Length: 499
Image 1 (tube, one colour):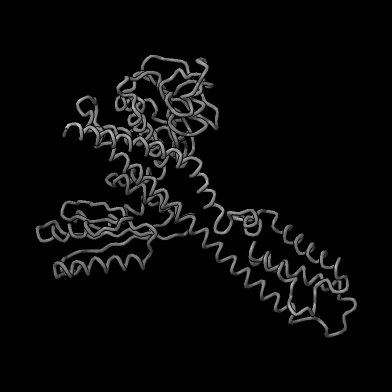
Image 2: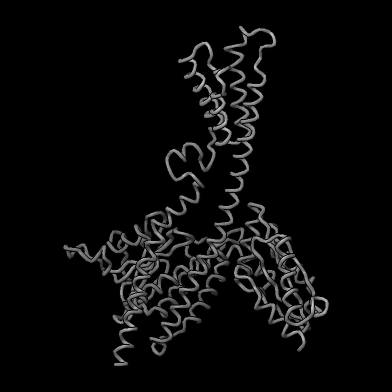
């Protein structure tokens, strides 16, 4: 009975994992594209009239739209009220609603331009017949103030939305990396339990080799030391290690540009075979950007045998959010390895490879100057430097330097345990001192001060000492967009870890 219960639990776990794997491609496909479209449009722009009134990006023809809208509004009123096209004396300046909407739509400058058009219309329709001193000053002064207030409101909230989109883009990138790492951790435990004895290499060895392949891709870089991800650098060693990890006997990796496949493989393992671009499995993988195999629901009901696929599986190489740059076509693999979990593991390794090469340009400068820095620390520091260069959003690096003695061990461990979830921590060791270097994303001087106060209060509550009593030195660095590797190198020199 116990054996049957354990077998039922394992079957239920496998079914749940397969169901989660089936849902994941759909969530990252059309649903992910819709979410990105909603983020790009901004608040209130999910409907057609919202996009018409408040577009996410101002077009170059905004000046012509402003002039045309005001002139058209005045012309329509003139058709119905030819003797008073500006609706003077109606108790409310109805015509000023058009410049107000334009100011909210495009900002203060174009709102002021619309106000000038209204002023010109008064000169055309009323200037010849108006008596001296009859200029409606309060009418135009109130309308101009209304337009300026609306334009200022539009400018401020446009800047806030742009800043929020940038911050959310960074957080989404971190969330995607965390999700992939979590999935890799879950798969590592399952594979260690199921087929540890049958595996030629461990998952840790595979991930280490994949990272080394990404680091070696700098040799394929252009003049600015940026590897071209579309050329699939390091594809040969990657496919060899992936074939060992996933037990692929005959497979090939090909490039994809747009929706066109290059039938000449950039890497292959096993016996060479032909790549047929019109194969239904390959077309399914290109169209859906998801893992494809002959037992997929879309390919299972094939009545004509000639329309069946000649391959075992086809997995996409996705760079970034949903950019297809290549395919891995599997022609032959052991029957026992042809499981959905094994193919899903292949898909995750492909994403890990593409992300490693794509993000290498961000961290290569820092790793060259500070080779002891962890890869994750260098990657996030490069991302935040680019974020500050593009949007001016502040981030900081804080170092707490401890002595290497028995009295400082407890203080050191306490600070390590008090890290924030979003921070990236590097435990740097020197000859005579050691430091906890914390990268604080999206944190300025105020957040750094609050962090130091919280750490010092925690030490005072647990050990009755502050920074001075515990002989803890503090160094801070403001992340800028200029040469983050050189700034980190100077920052480490100020820490005096080898003093």
